Amino acid sequence: MCGIVAYTGSKPVMPILLDGLKRLEYRGYDSAGVSVISRKKLKTIKAAGKLNHLEAKVDRNISAHCGIGHTRWATHGGPTDENAHPHNDTKKRFAIVHNGIIENVEALKASLGKATKYNSETDSEVIAHLLTQQTGDLASRVLAVLSQIVGTYGLAVVDQNNPDTIVVARNGSPVILGIGDGEMLAASDMSAIIRHTDQVIHLDDGELAELTPGGFKVMRMDASITNKEAITLKDLNAHYDLDGHPHFLYREIVDQPGTISQTISGRLDERFSTAHLGGLNLEARDLIGVKRITILGCGSALYAGMAGASMIESLARIPVVAEPAAEFRYRNPVIEQDTLYIVVSQSGETFDTLAALREVRRKGGFVLGIVNSVGSTIAREVDGGIYMHAGPEVSVASTKGYSSMLVAFSLLALLLGRSRDISPQRGTSIINELKQLPQHVQQVLALEPDIAKLAKRYKKSSSAFFIGRTHGFPIALEGAQKLKEISYIHAEAYPASELKHGPLALVTKDTPCFVVLPNDDLLPKTISSIEEIKARGGPVIAVTSAPASESERIDKLAKAVIRVPDTGELTSPVLFGVVFQLLAYHSAVSLGRDVDQPRNLAKSVTVE
Ligand code: F6R
Image (cartoon, rainbow, N blue to C red; front, side, top):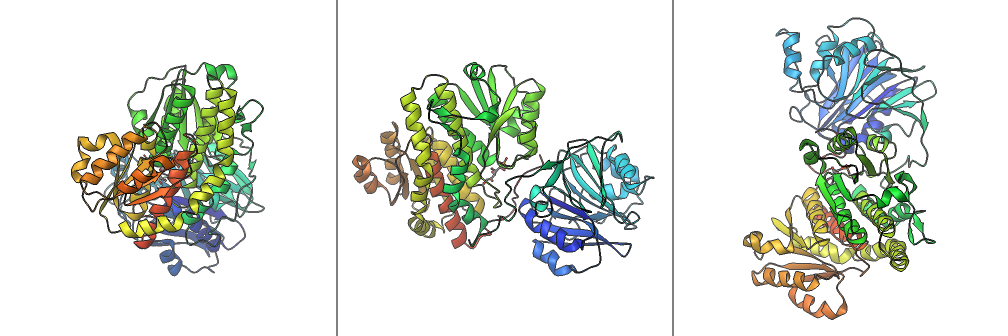
């Protein structure tokens, strides 16, 4: 959410900033801007809208070797040129870019007095004006300003009078330093750095760094120096691009046989018919001591957590709940020693999930992370966990990240199940199910032409329902989420059993109802729900792994049927999920939506 990039060195800065912003654009795309120091003058250029609006305004060849850039997701103030970052003080000596929220902005403005004129409606601009009130070098000024701020920030500052120095700081919003040869970079996200260097440092909350072409100095807020070790990035796909596909979302959907294999790779222990998850930092003794599990996440990560809860409960017979991280953290939760807490996050930076993690750890709870982004804040703060290894996810809507979360939960359910009641035979059959999953996903991908036809047929609907029962319900939630966020068709998910308690009133011939119909014990009951929808004239689209014996009945009731392989309770959520991803994708494309960057949204929600 909002992207920051900064560079100081000997190379022309503008192409580096623009390339960095391109890679960060998925974090926010309301507006973008840069400030560079050229011939001892600070120049700030910004533009509302996507990055190409800014690109049209800047001189790529400007003689400048130090600068900062920002891509914005609006929090305070609409997406206008004025509200775009960077922000300057009145005399245009300083430029700042800021991610986060300043909670005491009114008090800070009052301290500056009425004479200060603001050019934007943002909370961030106040920082630029406050810098003019301080003395000393740039780092001392920034430290003095930050001591007055209540709120969160990832911040980068340049000063016309210190033309090759950048100061960055972090409190609640990620900042990563990149160490080059005679150059330094900083960014809110690795993707803006990895083309330039594999040596990085993660700033921790309460740290500030001064960057010059010759190196860097990290300080705490009391100005004491702290020694930080650089880490070498490995296995990072530095050149992640469309790879010939029309959209990142499409690439991320069709890449799933490979990304799921990566999540599974090296984690199946065939000898003991279990999963091998070395990163958990839990002994067998700890695993049998787990009495309850609480899973925390936001959005699709929460829905993956709900599916995970169902898998673990069913296989390991441990009571599991999944809760929205943002609600959990504010309800003064009871933290218990024998409860295992699991936070789920693709980006590893979602603010509410991170805050929930911190709340649990503050109270002494043990927290595992299921995280994709290596070295992210959540990954660094958990007690142990499972990396998803799904590779970068750039499209705002999560697809391969979501599926790899489900796979990570399957592995954990297998491990917990085998540490308790399930037999080696059952363990082996789950291992086989997981081994075949990439192939099964490939089979579902082959259904794309049929799913695309459905998407076209129902694209004019103003509303759609997704229904399922027990472990089918989280799948329905994610199906509705995908459709609404990228096609903007209103979509709601319900447990099939709940329809008659209210939502059925909305079912008409114009509301397609997508029914999750796995081959499970509740199949006959879910089929009865289809009857209820059909009786009200609602078109039913059944997505099913039901056996042949039920096919005729389902075919009669449904307007359309999409058949997925009948695998098992651990892996079928992935297969149903892929159908709904393709449905959402084709609906969005046929409606001419901005598939990778849907309106009002941003990847990696680093504000509360
Ligand atoms: C939906 C989507 C979001 C994210 C949510 C959590 O497609 O992408 O709902 O799932 O913002 O993000 P992470 O997993 O990065 O914590």
